[in-house]
Length: 274
Image (tube, rainbow, N blue to C red; front, side, top):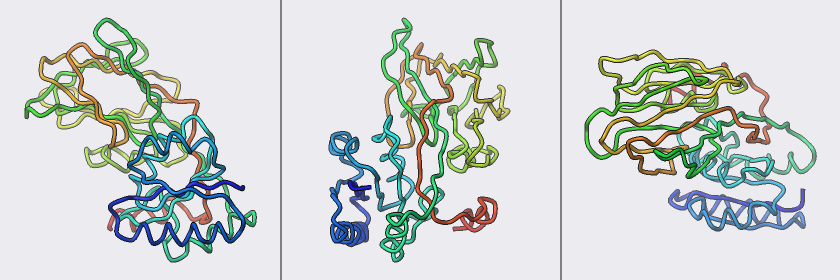
């Protein structure tokens, strides 16, 4: 490992100082380093492919932005936690240099997380955009406080028309986020399955489904009211009636460099109580 990128949360008061300490340590080891705000998408895209490791300084949101920029490169992420919960981040800021030194000396292990792939089609079935998702993809109502109709199909077979505030497709990693708040189950982060979770269904199908990795979900916006497509909580696009989102298991994984081999279940209650 010779080239490092440090991606920090620009509005977290402690992030620049912690990022600076990490930068000075890496430079003292004769390594190449660049710093970038997690909100500067152009900087991330331009530089991420030339690094061997990304160090994020912030919370889970900083990691989600970094993970989007890394695709499709298999670059490991070291997450320094300045956030509140820290399901994805692991390293405490006062132990950042110590832990990175451990990585440089060959310690730690790689934690691989499954992603979803989402493709956005317009009413004429023209593919407009595609994304790889670490946490979740959400189809939700827009600025008007009315339910929307979302026609759902799995593997080409119609499931139901959700009349709701929206629908979430969440990875196992994202099962502790918005999906959980909407009543969804918690999946172990190594599970390849993903979730289909309705948001406040009204007089319609309201069951949460665990989807096997080989299955494909199609969600079509059927209501005349404008909807919103949200990718990992920081990419937001308007949806029109007739637009379709196709969601499937991705071949790409997000890699984390970890030092703590502790049980996911052993820390779950503590994290949820923060």
